[in-house]
Length: 243
Picture 1: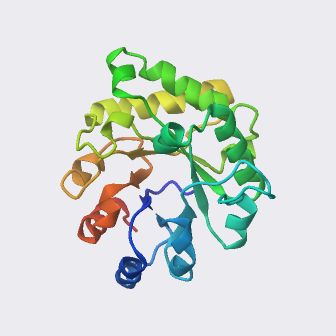
Picture 2: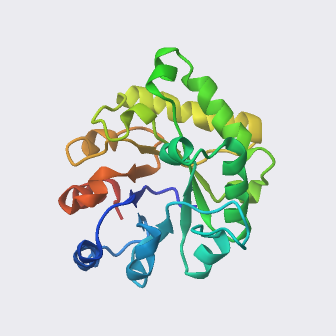
């Protein structure tokens, strides 16, 4: 993977068909694979064929079969998608994705040549109890252990403190830097993989991207709410994605 910053726009469950048509018309000006859009699965075909990357927000842990409403890694890969999100806190909370399920999804994705963005992060309660390192260690090792060095080469980690998602509250740059260092240390010391790319996600916007872009060791950003506001998103891309 390139040692250049990427911006991944997680559109979540938003936008109507009419809104999507207008949105796509405006993002046609983006000509770099270092910007990746993850729309609702229903809209993925409309995003394909342009100069940016396209990923999927969620995949099944199953290979194929009678799993109504789910999408397999082979289906996603067959459309030319470049990555999948796995382990987002909303999926952990609302869809009850356990670490075992997340591990299965990662293996399915890697088996079908999809890159993976593994989302990890602590809740406010866990942070207040000084358990951030403990939580991150468990989230990382429970799903990444047993992967080969080649497989790990297709993994990004997205540090998304749960308490920062959609709240307009973010950690300090120092806190993010320290957490990124800790994540890299765990992966290197326990999995023997050096310098895994780590993104930051959580309440990123046009006003704070300049400061966040100064975080040392950060390989890019996973953008949620601001990805729906194109002026905000274009500013984030302008600052973070430098050719």
